[in-house]
Image (cartoon, rainbow, N blue to C red; front, side):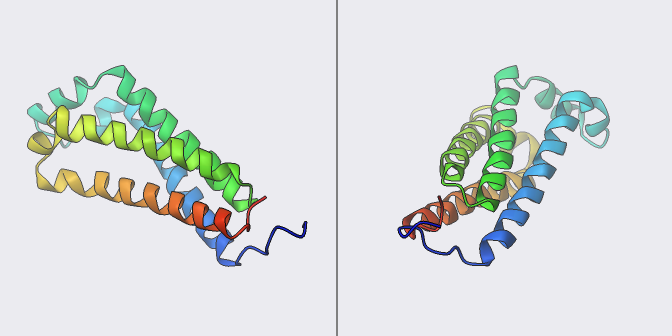
Amino acid sequence: MNEEQTAAPKFVVIVAIISLVWNLMGCGIFLTEVFAQESMMESMTEKQKDWVRSTPSWVYILFAISVSTGLAGSIFLWVRNRYCVVLYSISLGAVLHQMIYTMVIAGGLQVMGPSGAVMPTIVILLAVTWLIYAVSLLKKKALH
């Protein structure tokens, strides 16, 4: 450790593991939506199924970017590498674009109802949290 870098709090590992598990679950959901979409929609109404099926492919590209950079950011946070900030920033940007399009522009809130806003809100809040935490560590010079 060089003189400019300070020791990272032990809490970093806990946050990194939580972020890693969250992003692994996101990867699982992404794979389900891409490869097992019909089985995922079994409990949905026909209107909801039509809405899901109308999702443009670029939204799935954003989804892939958000979960893969979030996962990589978690790993980089775990090893206390400053590039976790860049990765979490990309992940948050992709999440915001994906959620704004699907829930607002494409009408997801109307189709899925108010409860459909719960998971997107959690996803956005956690993406913001990971980024703020990583930036705070960078400012404390606890990342290399």
